[in-house]
Length: 276
Image (cartoon, rainbow, N blue to C red; front, side):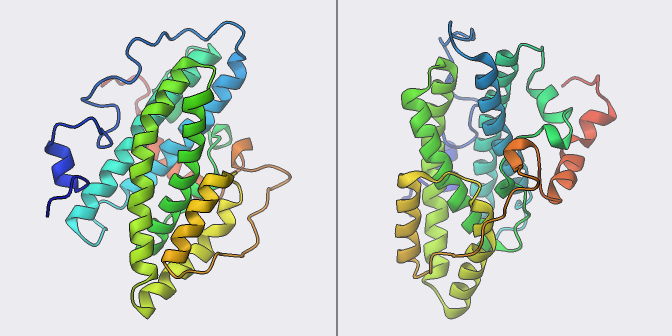
């Protein structure tokens, strides 16, 4: 099959589309972009924005990595692993920028491995462990449709040139993530009666967590088109509300978050002075 989007072809071909292994081994998206925070910019607001978007990518990348050896086919394992690497690359650059903007001397490792749960600002959608492949596809679809809209806007309007450059590079990655997820949602939703039921159940389960996202008109329209093509009903479940008025963006997370961080941070915390 001649498919430029196949995992193996994309790993070997010379192409300008570097969605595989974001930020590693290819042209640096920040080459020629100064690290100074622009004059007049709100450094604290920039740090908070980069931290939140970086945390989304870091935690979701960790969850996606857990699909390696569990996907239905080797081709899908390769694709999922590289989507996880894309998000990890985004997380590294965004956390680095957050550290630069806040001016406290914290680098990407310090922010990833040595913050406590309540210091993370990711949305709660990325924390849940997928119960099955249908939930994997549903969550990736919703997350990537939302994030693509956010990053397209940042690429066009962000006052910080570093954040704009990160967003411009990420748009290519996220467009692929969204298309990959949409393909699976349609395939399962418009498949057998069993696959349709599982896909609908997955959407219904995850939809309350999506309420924390501001989907925007573009993402909402895209999701509606995918649901229609997949013969799926738009979920109508009640949103997962804030806890004491706070959500993931405020540092209030689901029970799953503590387990994620225990796994993610254990090696670094066991030997804080280690280098690699």
